[in-house]
Length: 130
Image (cartoon, rainbow, N blue to C red; front, side, top):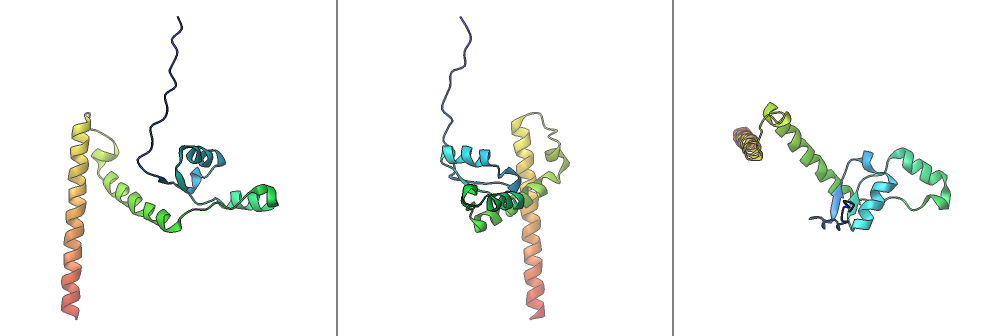
């Protein structure tokens, strides 16, 4: 008897939107997301837009994406970069998921405390200047 893999349906995603970098704007990626019922929030590359326009009517419609939602992706990327600035998180020294998660919580707490102290110092400086 052959060992066959059973085809299981993919789980439904937790979100209906996917923000991605423009490098992932291929036709295949967009088609896969469309089949799964996920809205792609990916801007179109310049060369893809030029090729689409060059083909005229055969090129299809322009890609529609929510520019405001795409801007929020930048905030998440900056947070990830701040987290990775801590070597233990960037290199994944921790062997267990629990200790890695504890490191993430610790680093996020440090980032949050620094942000709070910076905000309070700025507000105090603004009060003195007024």
